[in-house]
Image 1 (cartoon, rainbow, N blue to C red):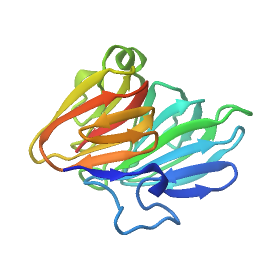
Image 2 (cartoon, rainbow, N blue to C red):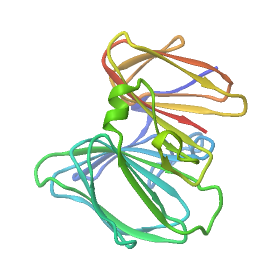
Image 3 (cartoon, rainbow, N blue to C red):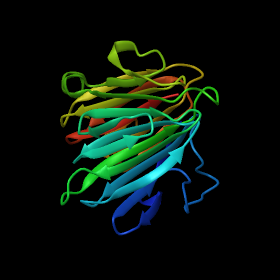
Image 4 (cartoon, helix red, strand yellow):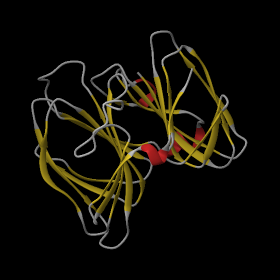
Length: 231
């Protein structure tokens, strides 16, 4: 059995410089039916205008993942990291006992489009940490590329939780399958394009989830991209 979360049902915030779609309750958007999925707490699809961004602010006890779709995101934090996150790159910041950071659009004019994802850690009060890596070759060569995992297998970035994150870019008519094991849950977030999963047809911004062990069958109706979480 699948549960579908349509794009236009998500929370929406328009701050002028920032337009954000909230899959789960976040900030001023509250929906008791959508507080998260297993250990997945936040999926925000953000679009930041050129020359703007999030000023310095704190986080703690959260695994925060950023995935840039278009543009570039400039990151600075209290651990001493000063980086840019570009398309095909994934960043993981383990907030642990506390981190202060800022995120700005690296371009003065062009919009930056990215996903910010929060996953609850397996325990509180851990040391902060940071990881960033380009998965361009992997995403372009595999139909389902593992980018985040607890054990760092297959070259993925480590996370302090039993959670796997995959990125898939498919050409029209491509197919891929994923075996969801017993006791696990899957959340699939469509980034772009149109995909059929089982009998459900999903478009950009839509999502689908299940708690049932099964083989998930993805069929790309057009050139598409999605993020798969196995939790």
